Amino acid sequence: MHLEEDEQLARAIQESLNVESPPRRNGSANGGTMYHPPRETGNAYQPPRENGSANGGNAYHPLPFMFSSGFRACAGCHREIGHGRFLSCMGAVWHPECFRCHACSQPIYDYEFSMSGNHPYHKTCYKEQFHPKCDVCKQFIPTNMNGLIEYRAHPFWVQKYCPSHEMDGTPRCCSCERMEPRESKYVLLDDGRKLCLECLDSAVMDTNDCQPLYLEIQEFYEGLNMKVEQQVPLLLVERQALNEAMEGEKAGHHHLPETRGLCLSEEQTVSTILRPRMAGNKIMGMITEPYRLTRRCEVTAILILYGLPRLLTGSILAHEMMHAWLRLKGYRTLSPDVEEGICQVLAHMWIESEIMAGSGSSAASSSSGSSSSTSSKKGGRSQFEHRLGDFFKHQIETDTSMAYGDGFRTGNRAVLHYGLKRTLEHIRLTGTFPF
Image 1 (cartoon, rainbow, N blue to C red):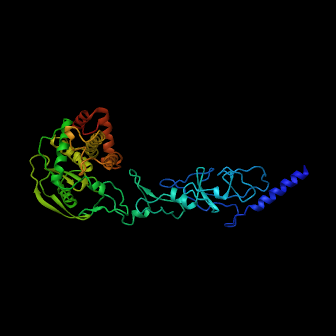
Image 2: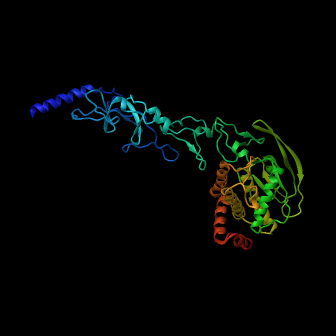
Image 3: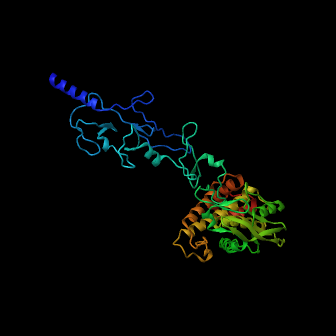
């Protein structure tokens, strides 16, 4: 027995000499990983965990000194490992050429490697697979001063981007709010706004272009038994003309930071858009004409900011049409949260009807919304346009302002519980939403 134990000890010593000791790093020979993906609450990248550690990497470890000399099978090729060089890692032994990266399938000869689940990776392959990239500059999102990967993300589109892009002048689309990727160019409107190409595809650019949509909104109201009998002019205008008209209006509530629609009650002269002038990726100017508003009833006109996608233009128009309906029906002066809230409810209802119409079997729609399923200038509604409708609906639902946001949520609960007709009757009698 002593002789057998001596022979086993001798073999173990010989095997330990066959294993090359890894070089020391930072005074340690345990092969600790050098790649530390960060952890952070909020918008941060959480790396795959291994054995309860989030260090994203591992190192080769030499076999224990008293390793048994019995049959050893390579975890890669399942053949016997003999007395040559071998690796001990991940709870198994391997031929050096059998220990391969799960991404590129090449052997891992580096001292350090990374893991995801039960799969090993070269550190470079691991970074390429799992390290988040910026959707704007397409580079790996850098770490902050604490060594954490910090990024920003749009709450709806989940567009991830480096925090620096919020301060380096990277433009956002004035409609969908997405940042402009480096490889694409947004269209520059003459008032400084930028519009992405997807939103441009269904953008309403002038007053004549908007008239079919105006008829659809009127039919939508008529379907709710809320027909507007008076002929109220609808004009598409530039931002400057909208701001000037807002200053000339004595009453009304406006959605900051930018108003995109107005229901006017005063007599004014407004500059309306006849046709935009395009030059490459820019709108160089507008062909406009003055339009004199005369007061024949409580509403003189509805103004909408030009250059917005059809679904957004329609929701703004549905909102302003509700202002007109309330004034023409003699409703008392309402608090901002009640008036803006019920107007947002109607805008939300219209967008929902468009989403439902667009999710049907398609090209043909009901007679009251014949163009609702063909809002893109190219004919059919694109997949992006479906998402855009969901985004505008999400914007209304998550608005944080007191009048537009809280007012909508209170009004929407009332309409869902009591119905639109009873809610409007309660507002007419009391000036408040029913509870």
